[in-house]
Every structure is written in structure tokens, then in C-alpha cells.
Image (tube, rainbow over all chains, first blue to last red; front, side):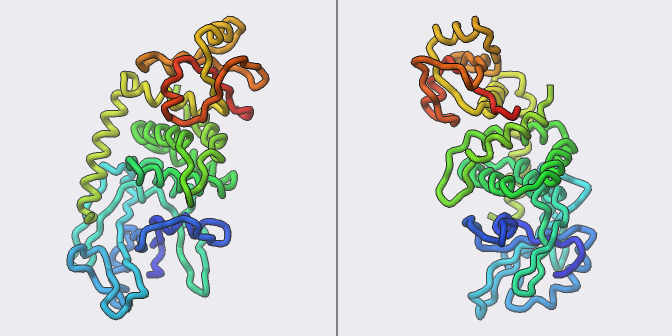
Length: 217
Length: 112
């Protein structure tokens, strides 16, 4: 899957972006791959090279371990379309071989420095895009809170240029999504700490600074 | 949940987000305004009505972002060096103690 533009995304990425890929967060047991719609054809050409995984009967964009490979986890192919960003514009891209669900917020992701572990090169997105993608995803309840705590964890390791990129990305959003970002930042600022998750209290100053920069008068 | 269901859920949440945005200057937006004020505070104190009035009289900046709630939350910004006799410091979280406080004195982050 070393196709230009293809990124490993999903809940495991914040783990890999920790210093030393420390992987301290509990995440779901699958791997999401973002496929730019322009690269869809190239990716399909490489599907035959995948071993140990087979296409799911229930969800053709998901590949599951075959019966002999209990050491593998699911692979979920998702579409990335740079022309959309709003979750409302998400759509299904039909295809006989590899249909894709194209999620608008994924277009905020851009390639970051790849990570190499034991000779395996993992194409990761920039943390800044990941933060903004989570801030507009607008989940609720426990899942929403945990996503915001992951944002806290990502912010904790960001440098100045990453934070500047966060601001740029947010300012480029439509007015409703900017509103959603500000709303989620205030929720993050007031969240209770949870075991085995980043402590939101340590990010309150930074969140206040972000809110200050994003304030719309 | 299938990916198609995820898309339908995202679109449903998007419709809710649109509604919330339209409500931003009405009752529903009151919570965001209140949370935003709290997010700018490094510390928060539950103060008596008398102490609140005294802080306002001594030059504290009144913040209207709690006024849209019922009952209205009266917010005044103070400095980190002001001593508040009898005030109860609150954890900055939307818990029962915070919501019960009708008069709040907030200390901004030093860097803002």
C-alpha cells in the first residue's frame, strides 16, 4: 500500500505520534487507511498483493484476517476527497472491487513525517490535521469525550509550527465548523481526567490561547 | 456499525450542528458562552452576592456570558492577587458545584 498520499489514520495514530511511539492510549483493534480518491485505482491494483486478509462479506471496504491468521487485525479502507471537508458531505464511492466511504473531515489530513518501526515505513498524517479532524467530528458521550482527550494528548506534543497549522486549518473551515471547533475546545477545557488518558487539565492554558485566537467577535 | 451507518450518523450530527449554530445567539448558545468564559479562567471561585457586588464596585470586569442561563450566572473577573475572604474555590468543570454557583469570580490565565 505504499501509494503516494495513502495514510495510516484512525485511533492508533495518536499512539504512534507519541515520542518514541510510546502507545499509551487504548485504541480499537483495527487499522484505518485513508485512500485519496485520486489514488483509488493505484490502490486497487495492489490489493492482490495483500496476504492473510480477505475482503469482508458484510463490508466490502473492510478486509478481515483469514481463518489462519489470528495474529492480524482488520484493515478498513476509507476515502479521502480534498474537495469536501464537512461531515455532511460524506458519501459512498461505489466500486466493484473496493468501494469506499469518503468522509469529509479526512481531507484535513495531510502527510506528515513517516514513522519507521523495524524497517516498516508507516505513512502518518500531520498531527495538526488530526487535531482539527477530531475537533469537527462532533461525536457525543463517552466516545466524544475520549476523542477530545486524544486531542489533548496530541496538543501536548506539538511544536509552534504545528499549532500555527492548527489555527490555519480551523480558520479555513466554514463558519459552522469553526463554531463546532470552539464548542469542542470549551468542552475539552472542562473535562474530567480519565484513567489511562491524557490529562485535559494540563492543556487548559493552551486551549484558552487557541480559543483566544479563534474568537469571532 | 457499518460504514454506511457511520455516514448517516455523521450527517445526522451535521444537521444537529447546523441547528446549534443557528441557535448560537439564543438559549442554546448560552451554554457555549458560559463554557467559553470558564475555559478562559485559570481559577474559579463561588462568591456570595455581597462579595460579587463588592468586586464589581472595586473595578472587576463584569462578564455577561453567564447571563443567558436560568438562573443567570453573574461573573466577574478578578486578578490572581485579590484575596477573597469566604469564597469557595471550584474545580473548573461543569459539575454540580459549578452549576450551583450563581455568583462567580474568575481569574484569567496569566498568559492571556
